[in-house]
Amino acid sequence: ISEKFKLKEEINIITNGTLISDDLIEIFKGFNVQLAISIDGPKEVHDSTRVFKDGSGTYEKILPSLEKLKKEGVTFGVSCTIGPHNVNNLIQNIKLFKELGAGGVGFNILLKAKNKETPFISINQSNDNLMEASFFAGENNLYEDRIQRKIKPFNKKENPRFKDCGAAGNQIVFYTNGDIGI
Image (cartoon, rainbow, N blue to C red; front, side, top):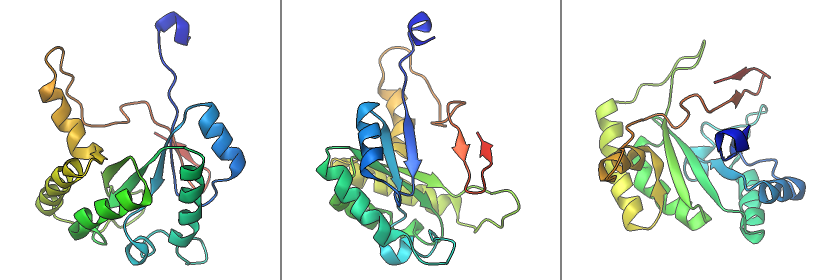
């Protein structure tokens, strides 16, 4: 199909990074996988929301995975979900992500989940903080996706394509309970 339609296969994986093995690293390298690790901030912030079934935080389990990736030359970005736990610390998060060796960051607004109460954050507050964080990231040579994806089309000379959602029908999500969705 890819030859017929001149499509370039692209594999993007967003993972919590807790189970990255040497075998997976070889697969990532062999298939040129674009990898994003979910990190919401420093240990205390991250572990306030990203936990194992037993309630223990995942942050310390991620760090060795990041070291393995860097050692093997596998580039990675960070997928950071914005919520009440970190909305006021996005610039500090960018500093941390840079220190951890990330090549970029994708900030994601916490969305309403089926049968779950979604904590409220002010859209104005999150937008202001995102803009400030995006400029800071740019000044520090770290690509930030949420705002830059919106700005990029304005800078194109020909055929600007205005879109917001990076998924746009190209994303499959595997939930921990085994469900699959878009």
